[in-house]
Image 1 (cartoon, rainbow, N blue to C red):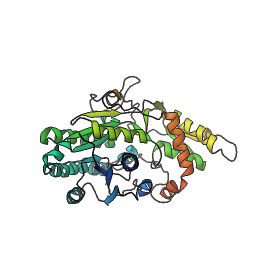
Image 2: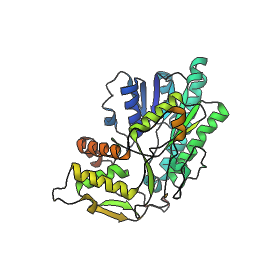
Image 3: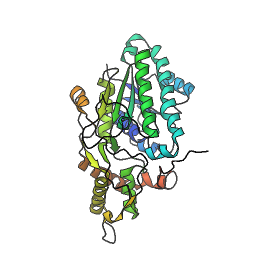
Image 4: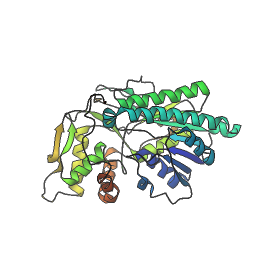
Length: 359
């Protein structure tokens, strides 16, 4: 396809969505329409580097609102849609699965139908170039043992309300391609980290609690393994998939950095000790505490990213060591970004402990 000149990004005020938007507007020179409901994890200040650009537009709207989506598509006439808007925290999905079904399943259905209506009325040349890119997670594949890695052919086996909702949305996207011919591409990524990450997630939570001298809660024994992907590397991968990927194809995106959770926390502690030593001379690792494990905690995720490497010539630029150092330094230098979040929307409390039904 020809390179899109205007992309509609859903969830563009979120963690990955804002990284994509900054890349497209700031480096690629592509116009972006950011559609975001501005739920708790969204933060428009994450877009401060590009929000004055004439290439950037913001629409506050709910992806579940079909009329609103129709209106945005009609007025902005994008060449492609990158669908990132989602509820994304496993612990929150345990406490309240309904929001995940509504946003991730119903919202994706609504976006697909709005996109299908818009695409079907495009002139033939623009219709042939249009893409709907659905961004998903490796958690849809379930849990790995000590060996092997997820490929694009791995069967789905979601274990949490979050991963089940994302698996459902993946299946909807494939069905709209097979049934209606909507030109879609899909991607499933490993754990992202980096600047502008909402503090409920492991790495920013450990950084902030470490700075505050608070206990650093590690689930179980910390033996669960994840593959870590720097968010700016992921954004570049998503652009490669959107602009060069083949319709109907799926691409796994990983950082080739498998690390046990406890080792992630220890590396955060070591960087904090180096870059911002405790006043009492103590070690942040002494703040680590082991807490009851998350219900249904998948043991290991690992991504085989050879397809995107071979077909689209993408490789991560950051190792976990360089990416984590950059991330810790960013949180030290940008307290004005995360301190307001802790004053209101999230205070660092444990989530994901409710296993009884509501009502």
